[in-house]
Image 1 (cartoon, one colour):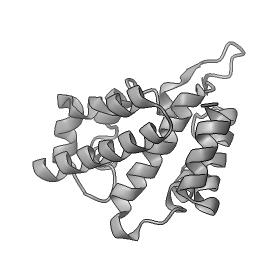
Image 2 (cartoon, rainbow, N blue to C red; image 1 turned 120 degrees about the vertical axis):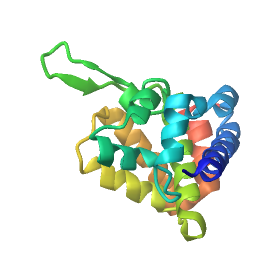
Image 3 (cartoon, rainbow, N blue to C red; image 1 turned 90 degrees about the horizontal axis):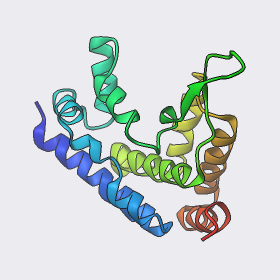
Length: 176
């Protein structure tokens, strides 16, 4: 059990996301980001499966075959593309639905913060993009428009740095 390690990790992550969301003018999202991580189903799973360098949901998934914590989390947090799924009216099964831009921007902040927290001193600006590329090989249920927008943001971060990425998102994507 890693109570303090998990609490420190999720609190540090939330602080970073809050800072990033505030840079984009997304104040409410910055304040409310990932509050469900403090709910019992998510928090105690995080304590039990804490690893420090990656999500505890993966360890819970390996042990149980699914992650109850993740199922709870993705259904309550609109910055996860998994929240934005629905049945296709064309008979294609479950499909990704295009996300509102403010949630794509929050997803960018979330991925940047998660990479910083989990990679620590080894963090590089390319890390969030590389993680995205690895996950896309698994054919996730993300709407193509959402994937393209997130990829553009992550490439801007990787190639031009944080200031350029945040300026682009705030002005070009969010129109603020």
